[in-house]
Length: 297
Image (cartoon, rainbow, N blue to C red; front, side):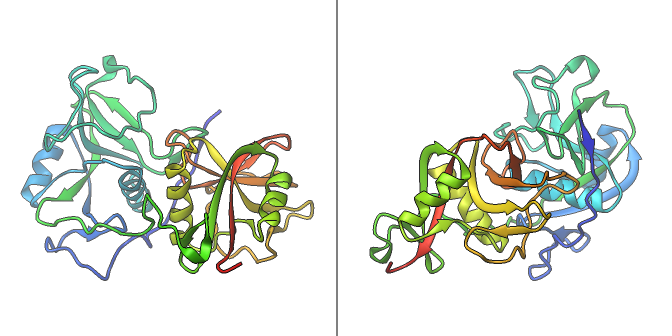
């Protein structure tokens, strides 16, 4: 069963670093884009971007895909051409000649009998995909999104993939004044919380996007490839609480996803299932987990 939600989130602009290409907007992934709300065929879209010193959007990461999708959906453009063409399954290339090193096909592999030009279903979420890519005949008419060729991307340095080990944290990883550790043994959320307690901490609580990105990167660096427990629970009265007693003041649950009561939540670490977002798990689920404790414990 599939669900479609349109995310009207226009707050993803990085206004502090304007684009040299003044008709474009720099988003949080550091790249500059312009949405063209003129329905046209694929080749005309390519030409339209070139006229504004751009190219059809090229997507090499989940972050790119999310920013392009949220930006397009927020401007009521649920289907936009992107810069991908696949003459055959083995010869997919981005318009700028770069390799296909990240994919988000709605159908894997895509059925090229439908067409060889690709568009994004911006803002669409189902149980396994977010902003998926569909293919169609290149003569079909759609809006399109351009990426500036005048602006170099600004790369974020948040969340190192190999976190440093601090003397204050012992065998834990030190980040932003606290200590983190990944438990690879699969267990229930209750047992994972007890394991964290035994080491002077709790299952991690997450109160901003930087911490969420760090937790995701640390789990990937430690080889967790599906999901891991965080300390968030929805109680039987519908209230969300962290196991360390802090209030929930930040949210990464997919918009529109219903959470049963009570529930235990995990963070998704797989590229195929809403990565970085928080997902309710079955009551008998067993997962890896991530603890946080103060430094110098």
